[in-house]
Length: 169
Image 1 (cartoon, rainbow, N blue to C red):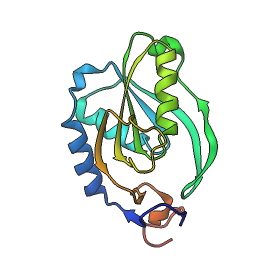
Image 2 (tube, rainbow, N blue to C red; image 1 turned 90 degrees about the horizontal axis):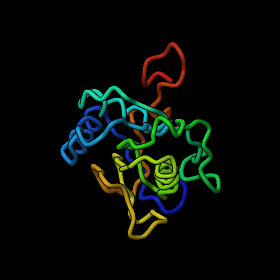
Image 3 (tube, helix red, strand yellow; image 1 turned 60 degrees about the vertical axis):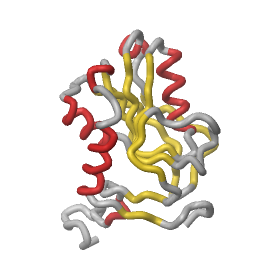
Image 4 (cartoon, rainbow, N blue to C red; image 1 turned 180 degrees about the vertical axis):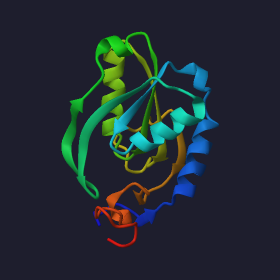
């Protein structure tokens, strides 16, 4: 375990749906033209938000930053990002699983702004003590923590061996 985290917290699918429900209560879905899911961690929360709000215009930003628990590269790397024409003039809800250092969210938000979009960031978990952007944070978040969160879709939950059910790996 990397230093600076208050242990690991394993979440269930029921806890995820509760967090998404809490997040959904913070904004009006009609205020957004599209959802921008940050891969990989934001894909499932973005899907749940899109299903609950009936938002069908879903874009993805493939961003590489974490290499292991608490380990990152220096700056986020964009592997794939929507073209400016898909973002220009749009109200964009950026969805990710967590705002830890904030580097990924800030980089994605800035790139949407540069494309002429109006971004807002929504995450399941916000870690204000880990954020490298004092005075800045997500527009919407469901919970604060200083733990390393292990989401149900994380391979650490034990489902990574093909053909085996969760817990058998």
